[in-house]
Image (cartoon, rainbow, N blue to C red):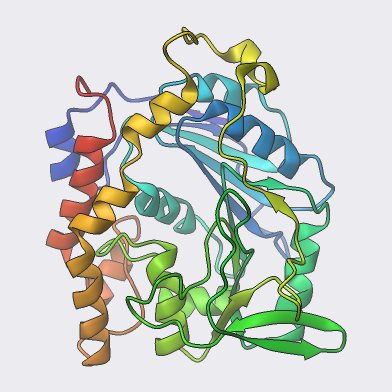
Length: 345
């Protein structure tokens, strides 16, 4: 077990000036570097909403699927960190607590930078309960049957409306998925959602990381793959648009339903983990304010000014060898640091 002491809380201004230096506390076991065929890397990011996180993690760990799980807590203020430290499972390789929330894309890229070159990369959102026990096995069946598929995702469920973009049914040897047909830029929901998603290592070699320059997450990823690589992206659904993997995305539960209530010290009469989350959840206003970067990014791709590969501050070599707009990325990170953390941090 490796324990790295948490740094003292960092001033926002200092963190912004030093993009890779947000303090972190890491608890966990090191991955086995000599595995011949490494199990998939499973990225899991938490940000408050302890009630949903607990039921989500239980569903993932209550399976016999093999994976190397790396959890990052983005400065939750609702006892999520205390709960995470109580979980014991040999498949959890590290649990990291950031002293400042820097936005979902930067957290994802922190984990992605730890992936071994030959590892598949999966990510599951903390509001997703996976009901299908052999869910990774089902992902891998599609990846193995269709080597041209680089990214696969599970369609969202209520309360979200499961609207599919234009797709093409692909079937081979009894294995089916729905291929994203277009992935057009700036077309509503014309992408594969990232709530429960997997990528093959050969694709990651071509695209690098989520775009820190746009921070548009799954809204840019499958569009970049479909239009600017030879790989395909698609949904884990059959020809009738029925999900092959069953998930639940309930967005709120009562305190009585919470399996982690023993760890919660909040005054639930006027403050819950859901109130804390909503007060700090800034994805929608961020997307509205910085959409112009997303549009300009794809314009540069269309004009051949950059490749499909996106670099990351957590991979200095990638920045040294690829196009990277540091001003854009730093402004994005600054937005989350300034708007989704406590004012006194």
